[in-house]
Amino acid sequence: MSSSTAHGRDARGRRPPSPLEQIAELLAEPADVPAEPSTGYLDLLGRRAGPAPTLAQRVMQSTFLPRIYERVWRPVGFNIAKGWPFGPDTAEEHALARDWLGLGQPGDAGPAATVLDVACGPGNVTRALAAGVAENGLVVGLDASRTMLAEAVAQPTPAPGRAAIGYVRGNAVDLPFRDGCFDAVCCFGALYLFDDPWAALDAMTRVLKPGGRLVILTSRRPDLPLSRAGGELVRAVVGMRMFGDREITRALIDRGLTGIRQRRYPLMQLVGARRAGPGAG
Ligand SMILES: C[S@@+](CC[C@H](N)C(=O)[O-])C[C@H]1O[C@@H](n2cnc3c(N)ncnc32)[C@H](O)[C@@H]1O
Image (cartoon, rainbow, N blue to C red; front, side, top):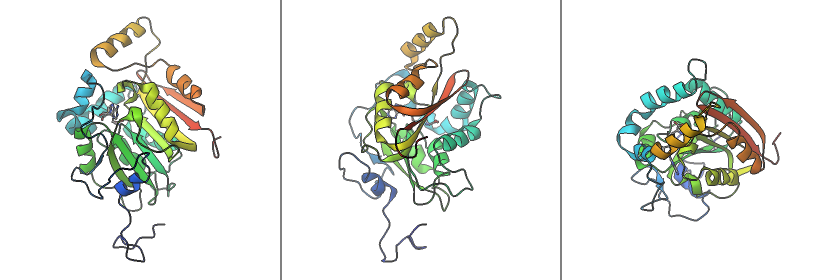
């Protein structure tokens, strides 16, 4: 239960830390964190170069895509890739993410967990994760795109009784957080865009607490003649990787993760795992 009063102050009249002040406690390097920056998010990239400017990354940084992403691009593109009407729709996908991460479902109390949503875009999955986390938890959305984050911070805050959300501009390949500080890490619809997805998996594993859970929704290269050549062409032209059926699961095993699970869809795969340690079964 929260110790703050109806006016947001605790019994001694102190203001509870803002989500960005809570995020400051999770950073590997101390940073000057304003409680309410003008952008609404904590910018840890500043003028530093973001991800390599492939065609796909340029689209993610545009002003147009974030505006239509959640209502049009995401449901249409992803549902086709997941094999709609046989694959999970967006609501089922969110429920699976919460379940595989050990979070609650809307209406349940849910744990007061600390959750990271890597490459959060306009915060669509971030908000779905917060719906399964109790009030004293924290959900952090990280993305490199200013335009995506501007959409994310413009969305309504979580329902009363649900975890606070805070957004960070940073690079998924080199996460700015301390080792072992998250109970759960989610990375949906983005691993295939990263210039070094293997370094991103290292970073996601590093920031998980022992026993913490990871879930990834990424591309899948169907096991068909010429699909490897087709995948290389997509990568060269668009800058998107198509991962083989065993590439991600093997990479997680190599990083010492356990309890690997996978669901395969026509052009996507959902992969879950746990970092060994207390609570990992
Ligand atoms: C297709 S959106 C995914 C949004 C959301 N996770 C979802 O599942 O709908 C991909 C996001 O990855 C972000 N991204 C790509 N490379 C990144 C990187 N190296 N670091 C942080 N974010 C990155 C893009 O800016 C974009 O917002």
